[in-house]
Amino acid sequence: MPQKKRNKAAPAYRLQDTPDKGKVVVAGRNIKQGTVIFEESPILYTSDITDEDILEQFNKLNLKDKDKVLSLSTIPEEDPSKKVLSLFRRRNINKSKCKGGQALYFVLSRVKHSCGANIILSPVGGKSVGKIEIRACRDIKKGDELRADYLPGINLFEPKRERTKVFGERFSCDCPVCLLPEKTESETNETIRKNIKEHYRNTSIYMTLGDFLQALDHCKAMLAEMELLGDEVFPKRVSVSLECWQLAVLANLQRPEVDIDVEMFREKARQLCCVLGKAQLSKWERTDEIVQKGNFVEFDTVKLRSSGPWAVQIIENLTQAKV
Image (cartoon, rainbow, N blue to C red; front, side):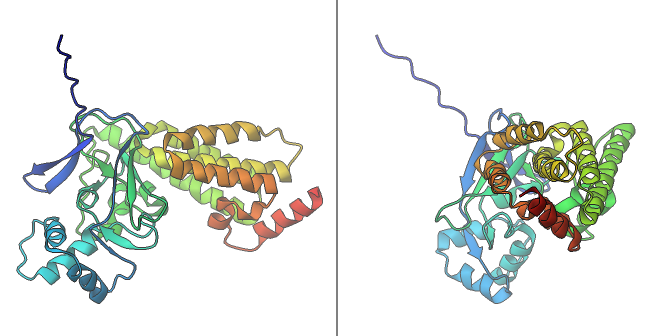
């Protein structure tokens, strides 16, 4: 009796032509949060972003890869050199994502920005220079466009008109968050983002002053506001959960009389990090290692938020006192 052929799974993504944005990347099937969608190596990579170096690396490519680079643009331009430089400025993936350099990718460079991203980009370890993992940071429906958050730092929580200015004054964001149809829904979203930014600022102020309990309170409030946005800002929730854990450790060290459930913060951060895979889980493991060694000045929250020497000095004094 002949065996039935198994249907092959639909590809996780595909390129789709649009009338106004060229080719975009869309989900080829329903994708669960945390799923690795694909990994991609660059077609053009450079550790130096001078025009001369970009063109030098482009000229080293074979004809097939040169065509791939030029296909990323739909803007007519007779001079290939000008086209390459324009593409690199508009579509490169920066050093924070591709291990110290900047690069163009045949698929990934077509992924547009969103203030409510559905994918997260993480550098792949090992010898693969510039290789990036693309993972779903929320559930994605078949046909949805894949979009990443390219905004640096806290910019994601600036007012709508301000947050994307980093891309240039002429940039107009057409992501689902910026195009929320209902005025009340849009205003609510903007209010929550404003509150997040305020708690972020206050966390930094109290961290700099060395008041770790107050810093923790604002960090917890920041995470609670992010949770109101659901998976819209899930990668930021992961980062802030790690920071809450680090601040809980410091606050517990400074104020032992206060009941702080450090283990709860630790476990919550672990659960969220696990969703986004190895790159995020390694940050949790590094934090756990720092806690075990008691070298608390190495916490990311200390390096990120301490604008003066006071917090570091207080941590060192607390650590010595404990010993």
